[in-house]
Image (cartoon, rainbow, N blue to C red; front, top):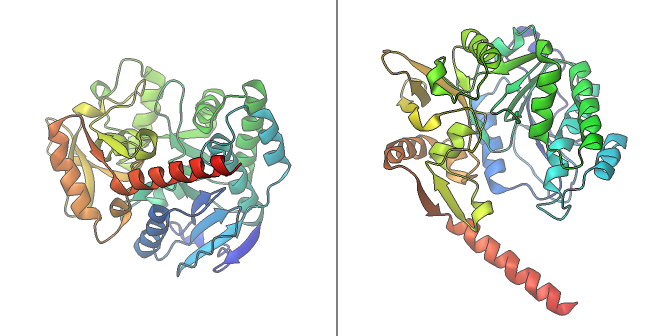
Length: 355
């Protein structure tokens, strides 16, 4: 693990609680614009928390004031995983591989920094009142959302120590050997199934059983409710961001779909009532029959639109999307993504002709 830019992680700072590092990981390729904006916004929001970006390529210079950049050195676990997986390696810079390898990068960081961290996925943005101190108070050593019978999500991933991330990575390699088509989400769910007593399940929605599908078993629901009691709020696995802000436009030639639920997920998100809380400057979930709402602490904006990560534009985007949510399922064309995909297609055809 090599420091590329910024300051070394401040050892011991989080003894005061709440100042743990916020860690992003981006492997194989150029840092996208939305991530750069998200990094700047996160640094602005949380001046007491060191914001860290782990990369494995240094061809693209990234110089953001207040950001710490580390280079992950591809190790034996990377090589083993690469050999086990059979996903198409030319899909989005070996997407399936690097989604799992992010955990290896986190382990390598924690070999040098032996304290707790919060990992945030690149397309996730946080509320100003994100409860770092409540994570520090957890007895469990790892915490993340579970969204379906088959999938967990590392949208928000709390790691207390090196031992638990090593355990997750050993498990990931075993799963990849067993199933060459596995993914980070499948691994997280199976990890939960095998080590339930060591995992704090982050709540993804209200503490009302009717807010979820019948496929949600009572044991997992109870664990989610324990999380509600502890955090007094929820963390988006992927349902809230997808439904209210749109699907990834890269999957549909620049088109994003809003008001769309995720197949097989537990959340009945189409029946949830979001509101904008002006005191928090963020989204809440309104509970029918109750005066109070519950805070949402993170939103997984898979649409990856730069404006939703921008501090200057975020309030306007959130309020607009909440207003539009009453219109049901609909689609929009993200012109920048559409034009970029046309450019990539033309470039690919040109290179083929030159072969």
